[in-house]
Length: 250
Image 1 (cartoon, one colour):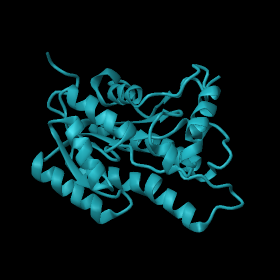
Image 2 (cartoon, helix red, strand yellow; image 1 turned 180 degrees about the vertical axis):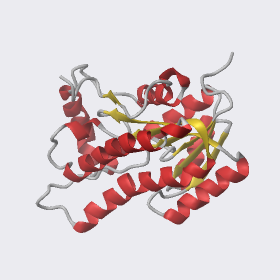
Image 3 (cartoon, one colour; image 1 turned 120 degrees about the vertical axis):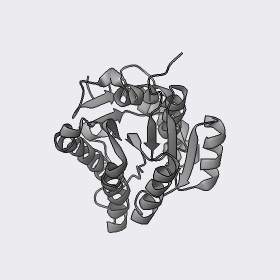
């Protein structure tokens, strides 16, 4: 039985946990070979075991341009082409505007915006015409959420990238879209600075804001990413697929 991504080569940044890992697993199941990145080798090793086959892990920080060069040198050596990029790596640290430091601002923009820009730019030389680029944004770009002013702005920037790149790359048939998840049950809740003993309460609070009454699952975002990466969305470019249980729409 053929898969929707048979013979395709995909690069997924931030592919060691959460949405990135679930997307890598889904893509491999649909016939793709995936390259995943992450900053922590231990997490990458775990991810490779979970994915099982047709995967190469490259320790890489998207904010480090030398690391991105190393990533694409590996892709060129192993496969020599790219059909899909899922720019998923990002951080979501919270800070009230009055208290946000320049370091807070620079760190989030360096990873979430600069990192995505150069992830895509540096992939273009290996990219097959007719490929697909998926930028993982957030439905937070549509909401005013206290403490997320910088984070939300970075995700709005990705929405702008998708529009511009859809126009720039159209002659090569490369489609560019954003995927905007809502609150998803992943380890990111610990990384944003929420104390461990408050994580479950925070998840319940987010779930109460979602019309569907629950948080999303990484596997659901992987299915959305598969739609945007595959020929199922062959007439879709420059668009945003919002997958947030209705949180930003109702």
